[in-house]
Image (cartoon, rainbow, N blue to C red; front, side, top):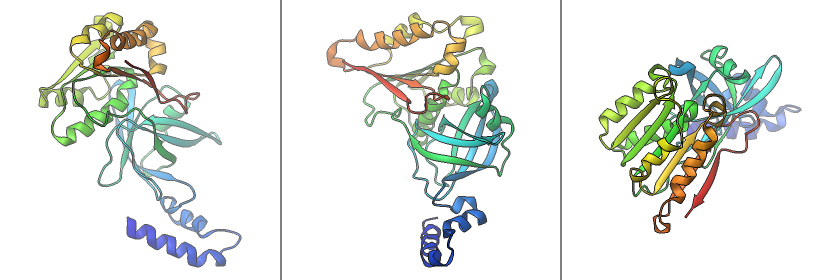
Length: 288
């Protein structure tokens, strides 16, 4: 890939003067959209249906993609009815040797529905570089607690897959809320991962049976999580499906602030990226 990129750069430099008023990159983009250095694009390589009405798209980024860290999001541009729309979606896996990336979307809005139902394999999408600070701590010294609801599980899935590749997960608790067992996005994979790794405890809260995820459910983990607490809550989904959502956020903050100052607890709350939230991917609630 690196050799091909260098050859394309040299060819572009040599032919620039011969292609006025168009640049060589314009012609490269016509031959193969992934070769363009002016406009980052990706080609859909696989479309896979997930539980909970979600869809995973595996994408091959074009020339210029600079990789990502598990937990980050990528900007996706699509044209719907002649209008270009941009949304951001969490990357649901670690960087791969073959360069492919994966996003998982739930068909809840205009762009998500387009990606889910009208974006077949070989389609081209516009991309923006990965961004976002919602990633694992550089050093994982003690237990982790993930609190997820709905499609808020997507960035955490990227982190879990990244840790799974290393062969051993740290002591961790993952408490996930969904309507029922069949509605848990990545449910089969999460359960298999918990079975493989005895130090990972998966708690599923099915709201049709157990009720809504609430403050008391979060505070129960005070003695389990240790000092590093990560809450990944899909703001858009939660606002619709979790009437106690505000209490849940307050509970995550309470869980941190209830600890003695020497424990230096950190709570990170993930904001699902939506139409009006392109710039906000994570909020640091406090370091005691």
